[in-house]
Image (cartoon, rainbow over the protein chains, first blue to last red):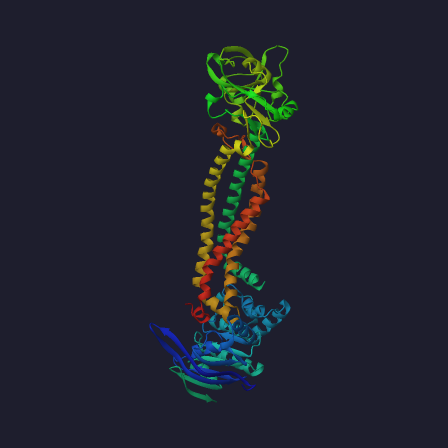
Length: 230
Length: 390
């Protein structure tokens, strides 16, 4: 794998058991993503975007084929190694924000740093910096139920970015947001991609997101239909 | 450490749900300790009173035919003092007791009683036998219990006619003088009996140098050489009482078990509900880098922390109650001793470290188990299913 290649999949197949047979969600995906890319997996519902994103994020395992992320063959990782890999190198942003409800915004963003064993002082500094990036430092002590959808997603972005991971995987990050908030979120992510060099991989069918992408990989029925770079 | 920190945050964040569980568990904890302490205290008081007052701390030697539950054996239950006990008898650390059947006539009524002869200077039993030393009046001094005095309408200074049969079956009678009324919680040394000097009773019964039982202040080693005597240790003598305490304990334990089960159900329910409702949170935790095992540990710690908080709260809230129970006691209704239990007017709770630590450990381990069991479901949960809340 080339030094600049962050993600490399070869012949990736994912089948789910359905009744007595199975449903093939991914049908032999070959994909390379380089470091610093702002790339989207786009396509209609059921095309396999989220499945591919989950496999890249070591949250799911392929039925066939290989996935290398940051030089690691994910198939060879145990559950705990995969967890460590995610903790060290990846950030996740979800459609429904997935903030931990009883934590404040600060504590939500702090969580990945706790897992990395950072000191309290370091955590405080990094969390406030991340909240600053997304423009929500004033809401640090608010709990998720006190935040709007846009604010919640900004906290989620801060949580994904706080440890400055090499790779951020975002699954439909704007699906629950209005246009204004969507653009604000996307601008934030674009800025972080440019300033920090973080690689962003989106799974989306939202035109607003697509308009920001530098590269668009279109999936249809589990296969790559097109791969366009703007 | 991180997991404990996270579990703590989750618990505090859960607010009212946490505090309700803690309250129920703490109340169960306090009631369990309180109840068990009362039963333990009662058992201790019973044991203490009966060994000190009725039996002697070292058990008793019984004439082999003696059966306290069969009045027909009393007539023939007498034998010369056992050889092995002579030194102790001389030193007053063993108390020979001769028991004979007799009849008294208080207020013109006839009442069957036991006449018990005991050495006035004995130190084996905690009875005021020093009061029955023959005085200048020449009348046989007698000691009775308060219950006996109440029932027979007797008072100190009263004279009482006692009729008995001597060893040859001849009836005889004499006047005895009530010299002291003892207030004792042990009914078996009070009701339907009078205590006089053993020498007087031996003379009255023509049974010089003989006794029915010998109470000992130290346990008897080995067996008596004479077949006329058998050794009954404290366990044997206390068996009926211990069986009764066990029955009471069992009844109490059933109640505490139900109470505890309700408290555990609250935690189990919370855990089951948490695992059902917080799947997405589990998926998020996994995505952020927690392993499945750590998620299981987190939820188990969270459940177990209910126990830790409840036990802390239980100790803080319960300590004044336990202290009061141990020092001021719990007044029991009069008449409890009519059931034959050697209890005073007050039961003192006994809250030893074994009870506190034992109950806490037992409850805590059960809480951990109840917290863990529902989380096993997580081991089958994939991160992607969890994220979808499936």
